[in-house]
Amino acid sequence: MRERLRGTPALVGWLAGLTILLLISMALGIVVGSADLPLGTVVRALGSSVGIGTSDVLDENIVVQLRLPRVVGAALIGAGLAVCGTVLQSLTGNQLADPYILGMSGGASLGAVVVLSTGVGMGSMAGGSVVSVAAFLGAMGALLLVFAIAVTRGGALLPGRLILAGVAVGQLAAALSSALIYFGPHGTADRVMFWSMGSVAGIRWNTLALTAIVTVCTIVAVLAHARTLDAFAFGERAAASLGTHVARTRWVLYALVSLCTAVLVALSGIIGFVGLVVPHMVRFLVGPLHYRVLPVAVVLGALVVVWADIIARGVMPSRELPLGLVTSVIGVPAFIYLLRRQRGTE
Image (cartoon, rainbow, N blue to C red; front, side, top):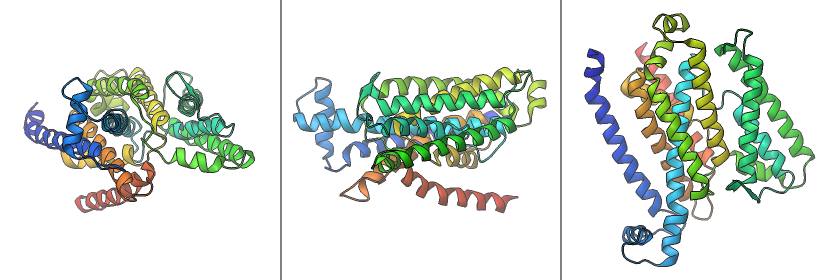
């Protein structure tokens, strides 16, 4: 209790500062684009959309139907990936764990390749593109296969077996994807590469609703397990001695973060390094306790992806960079810096 009270002012300070910075960044993300809009135009367009004042129809469409869902989607994706990465690093005891460690990125890519190689990727189904639906089904199929391989006869999910199964399934999915690309029609490789490098450009309100529900529910559920995740940091025996039902808790948390990751991958493609680096950055700022780490990870993850999207749109006026490329360029130096700082404290 003393530790919690001692750390509360710092936690509140980080949350307040990062939240203000996130809101400013989201506003900037609406203003900046291939056609920069003055702040007054953005305000009038937002007001007109809710019946306050009038605005140019084209400006309102750009702001409300294109840029606003894109910025909100980027924030949700960043928050979800950061939380999922934090949980998986704690459950597996692996500092290199990220949301894609359970083979879901390979499964999602395989699902997308199957659709893109048939040439039906521009269709729609269930409110989203066929590619997104196929990527979600591929991610969930890969996850179920990983669980089937890794689960013990007693029904437990051991971290070591789970990681190895995830690597094996991911490699299998990657091999099948490569075969489909190789034997597929001309141009398949380009379409797959564009999808796999991640983007939030295609996010619209109709595809954002389900993502928002799943992400918010996952974050709330994970926050409720903050003390349980602290117990896992000391090993399974310590967690069990503190009254945690280890097997059941693992199943619940793995299922939650896996479903969330599958939905995020289906929406935006594969955005690397956010789920890996952000948890380490947050622990460096506020310490290892999850009641601090998780809420700060939500805001910092959202901030990172929002800014990555702004950079992706603004670096080259004539074209947009893949979002995964930008997060990798940001994430690698940040990860190296954190490793060097950690080495200096040991």
